[in-house]
Length: 278
Image (cartoon, rainbow, N blue to C red; front, side, top):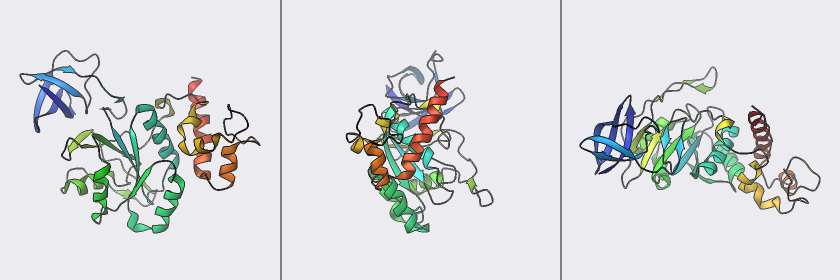
């Protein structure tokens, strides 16, 4: 019988079988490990085999991710470099990214600014957990969906709002330092019905360039907004770093590509270059 790993606690696993959770142990599967999100074969209450994975994330430990909802908010101050790294990460791992602007009730101008930055990059949805707009997220939750973003952007509040009950722990937000306190400790899948699951993940408040597995000269190919103008570059090998005849740089200067995105691209490229040297 095949099941889905919903939760891992030491050497015990919560497995969903035919819509019901069962706590099980595993037999001789230490080599490859077992991750939340794994599809497994079970027999007599024991996990016997991990089925082939679509992808696997080490930090946080999560497998077979179909969709990633990247959450930003006006507070804490958004880290758009992290957003851009996550977007590249999604392409590398074969994950569908969605950009979610949470706490949209705080500022309409912030919502407009974010949409302007990412309008040609990713599907965008703006919500607030204080009203029914949060339910607009449900149509984007397909298969195993991970919530990602800085601490205190409201990931746990989103889970609670979608499930209609207090399941995920909501942390405090420090006004003094304008950042959140990490509250999520373990990865767990929450069943939203129709074989769609939502995971709250602690490991995506930061993302090391080491996890991108991208060469710095290939990074430009992971930017859909750049690709729209790359054909206008004089040289096919153009890295879009300020050359006179660069179509991407021209598009940035004309406001067709976000300057924030472009500056983050250069930073990320240099960071990847440094990481690959070691």
